[in-house]
Image 1 (tube, rainbow, N blue to C red):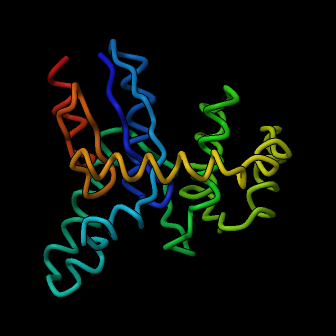
Image 2 (cartoon, rainbow, N blue to C red; image 1 turned 135 degrees about the vertical axis):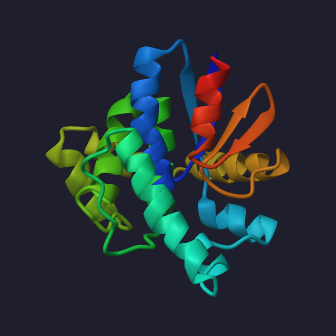
Length: 197
């Protein structure tokens, strides 16, 4: 089964899903197709807002979302190295473009793993070319190539098009998944996807 994964490194829930997906792909006949989009763009186009703003006046909801449910997911999927990025929210425009460059040059798996870890395990502020280059160079992951291509018009256009298309298909936040054009939203939907198998 193939599943489209609408993602942005900006979302801690996207990180959690990524870690769970690695295990799912190893244990089930399933392939996730990562589609880089801009979460900020999705919020703007759908008049949505981040949960921390949406639920800021509902303390019990905030506690459940960011403590109870979050920690439950970490335990369920044996995710051990997560830490909240101290620079949150981080502008992910460059690293999202970099993801498209990595896809086009066939090193996406390495790139996504390195950047996810940098964001949500090392708490790096990956909002500049220098910071991204330094991280990729440290891991021998085509740093010069990524920086050379992230400003190309076709890379910029693809990220915008991905974001617009996701919204047209009904996406209002991240993480979102599609199976045969049917939308599944939120990290908990991975359980539903797994049950379908």
